[in-house]
Length: 415
Image 1 (cartoon, one colour):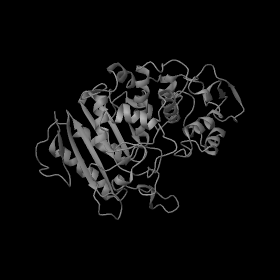
Image 2: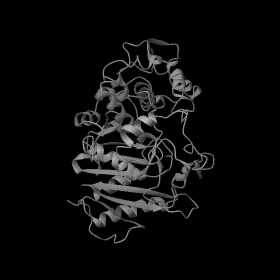
Image 3: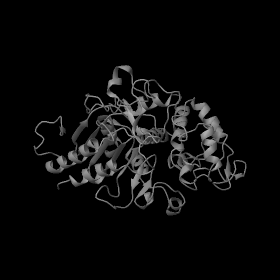
Image 4: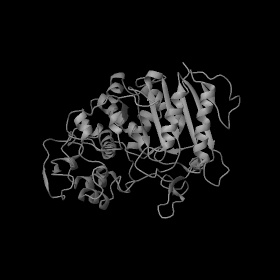
């Protein structure tokens, strides 16, 4: 069942199903409208589904200076919300015994054989020691492979400069060459730490995308389409937007550092998603809609099943949504301020480990995207929440709109 509220809704004071307060849902609408009215973004779409009752709110317009309204079928750049899809695809191959969690990935990724490891994060690239063991699939799924965002450790270390010179993500995004070239450039660089030792963000998901393609013998896009997207009816989720759907893709905005004014980061027509990419990034390349993300969320909420389709087994979903990091690994793995106080990391997504706010509690899992998207699943509340907007944050911290959305979702629970 689906109910709508906000500007396009009728009967918005009607009693809402799913155990949510109509007045508090309206409060959430007002809070989200304030973010649009602030001028930071032209519009957004939210979806809250509890007990299979979905409440959708589309606020504002598709672009600044446009009269085209945001709609529930607006297509958004997911950025890092792509990562859970990549993890699910990997687990499909694990369930088929085509990959094994604790076996080295050397056979399929020979570029990563015989790794060298930097002596320290500040070491020059030739100051290395041998890796103690090979990188395993589990290392990649838990982001403990030894490659990733060193910017959280050091802004100007030699490794960060080498990643930028090689035009590897996220120093440069998206990667603009082939999957084989991606692996060639990455394989020329040492690991930042020993396999399995610490957590580093992002790069492992890109490696997994290449691994899935090589093991399956299909492009990452085709594997996702056949094994996840089509079975879930996710017709608008892809690595690019076809011309006939381009009018549903908004621009993505950012703050111009030279002027402090809002500028277009990526346009719709002629932008990054107007054509199929050379590199289908497992770490951040998909676009989607709130309804497509709801289907994916309900599949995960239902332990891998969706209608008559089963994407994963219940044990696989449980494994994916378990925190796999030790306290020592978290202490040695800097990320956003105080992140590890309440969050852990499963397979390609984050999990809540401690309640410290109105929003979310242990057992929740999901992830966010840097362009202003957020997707989380709460099995305890039988709930999926989705926020879709398109604005690059001004700093390495959670934008206020994301926190306000989740506070608003949870304050609306009325049972």
